[in-house]
Image (cartoon, rainbow, N blue to C red):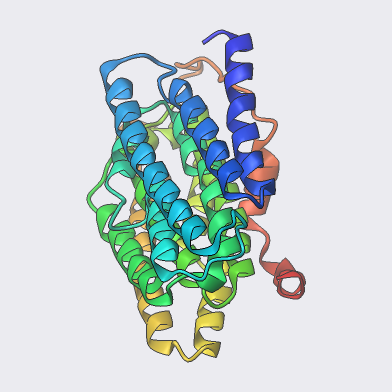
Length: 347
């Protein structure tokens, strides 16, 4: 794709999301979602092949259905209240319909089927945008309408999402699919706390985006798309192999790393609200995620390559990819735990 065209499309994607974030009127929110959806499709089809075409079609059909349901909820709300304001949501029907529409946009279970397929079919950079930037707009609306949402519906979707995100990733060898299932599980963690403390959802989203960006960038630096290609890393780039190990364990939520902060705070919040069983269940399903990240780290950094690298001449060219953002992202995704007291005061 030519740079001027890419710049125009990316600016439309960004302005669509910003429009959703700053609007307090349902119609402008809906228009922002539509702008964002129509502009992201050329980015998904950047490398034009049948797989990308199929993935983009699946994405378009799902998002168009979600937009239709969202508009239906908006119209029901308008008929009952006579106004377009976001914060006025007396009708449970409109509220449930909007929650389902936003769950489809986010890829929450039971509307998760498109996420692994679309992520697997598109290039790494497009998958990175899909699993990070595209989550911001729907979650901002969930944050705004949190008081009027049905907590039982949210809990059911959260339980299914963490289960699907854990079980789905167990048997995968494709890195993009693993990150897609990880995204579904993280969305479940965000949704479970929305009823009690929506601000924690924003903290979880921020840390999740940082960790996922760092992971995708490490994979793109390597041009790795499968566990097998990832296992060749340490022979050529031992430092990158150890960084992948750190970010993977952080995504799994292992205590000394940044990924533990949102899990710790969410379990604390659920326990405070007499949801100890739910907190225990969430912690147990997090072990499923940790298991498949451990498998990746084992394949990357803890297994020996069949032949040791004794050649004096490098057998592959040096990577020329830009890595300016990689060091700060890796720092954020692994070393934020000491800042938890500060985050508690902020959130």
